[in-house]
Amino acid sequence: MISIFIVDDDENLHRVYRSFFSMKGFNVVGSAFDGDEAVKLFGALNPRPDVLLMDYRMPIKDGVTATKEIRVIDPASKIIFLSADETAREQALEAGAISFLIKPVRFAHLLQTINQVLDNH
Image 1: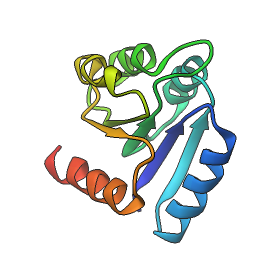
Image 2 (image 1 turned 180 degrees about the vertical axis):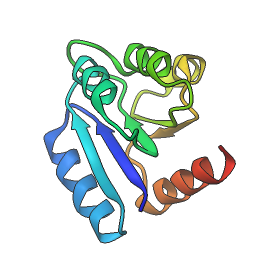
Image 3 (image 1 turned 90 degrees about the vertical axis):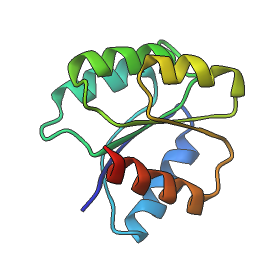
Image 4 (image 1 turned 120 degrees about the horizontal axis):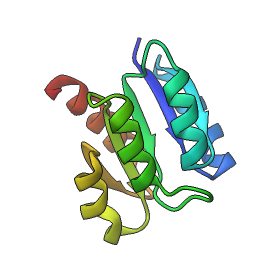
């Protein structure tokens, strides 16, 4: 079963993701509402999730900073960035994100990206 960690400040999006991934047989093993919380929770997870879905604009700590810190904890972490801010693409990829998707994202495209990330890494 594929394990997912969701990082986004939008509570509604968390509910939608959880419902969607549950229907697809994925296991949401963690969720955070800001980058600081994400780093702390990720560091405590054992085993590590297969994939992290990371937002960019969040309170306390943005997704780029959180990505850098998570990659220090686990350089093999697979982070898919999801943001409405196209200008964050380069920063996200340089920070260690494997993929960058623009919100709103179609769920079929998100599933395809998750499968590609897991197949290629």
